[in-house]
Image (cartoon, rainbow, N blue to C red; front, side):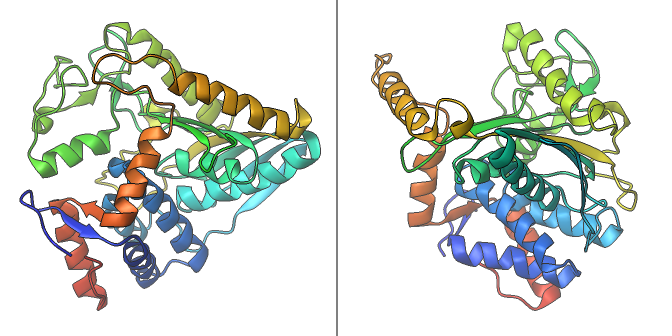
Amino acid sequence: MAQNETGIRLAPEPRLAQFCIDVLLATGTDMATAEAASGAMMHGSVHGVDSHGVRLLDHYVGAFRGGRLNKSPDLKLERTRGGTAMLDADHGHGARATYAAIDHACQMAGECGIAAVGIRNSSHFGPAGAYTMAAANRGMLALTVCNSDSFVRLHDGASRFHGTNPISVALPSGEENPWLLDMATSAVPYNRVLLYRSLDQELPEGIASDHEGVDTTDPHAVEMLAPVGGAFGFKGAGLGGFAEILSAVMTGMRLSPDILPMGGPDMSSPREMGAFVMVLDPDAFAGAELVRAGMQRYLGLLRGSPAREGARVMAPGDREWDVARQRRAEGIPIDPDTVQAMRALADEYGLSVPF
């Protein structure tokens, strides 16, 4: 498809998804892993979470090749109580483990009303919203969190401490799309910095710092990220700690300072990361019908709330649905660095590029 003046290419969603699957299969992964990793990346790219979209494909290929990720993991679920379980991911791709955890949690919540699954021996899982949305599409409310290697300073801190530690919550809204919150507890995810580097654009103010903890807008000078909240960044640091406790402490996995860096140089050792999902069945509370009615009333009031001049009041997820409609119609934008990486992968594996 056409290339615009910034060097960004546009790719149709089905072709791009199939390309990701074909590349991962060519590296030797099993089909379940290829489909899960592709599904998570495509969720990011379709909904405008480009930092966690298909630009991760080349990184994942390197992790599979290096041995960091198990290409054919043997996932094992241990049901610990009526509504709780632990899932051992066998050092597989994080998306493979987290989709499986959500599936188990939905089944248990159908029995118990509420269920939680801790995930052990996992790895980077991409956009957290992919998994809560999967549960919401089954009529459930879901929470998903994970931690990652240290890259976010504490409030008033001058060194890396937490990972970007995302939090996502989703539930059915009574509309076509669920209510979906998907946020990093850093001001932005680090992959957003990499995207700005690729596009050679300055960062917004107050989201990243250099090696001394001083704010910078130069994506090439970034050494750490700020916690979400700006001058009130203690709130973001606290939320990052919440994700840390559920993901690492409750699962017995590594804290952020102990996790191997995502970018290497060691791409052969498993990162031993944790994650955590929780699912609630609305029928165990007010009932699915009443919950949907309540959400419709809530969203109607929210979107009808007065907006500032020239602005629009949006619910969590509204921006994503707008982006998804546009991208499904016009194509998914691929940044220049990812275009180059995909061309190299296509040449190596004898595939056609999707753009």
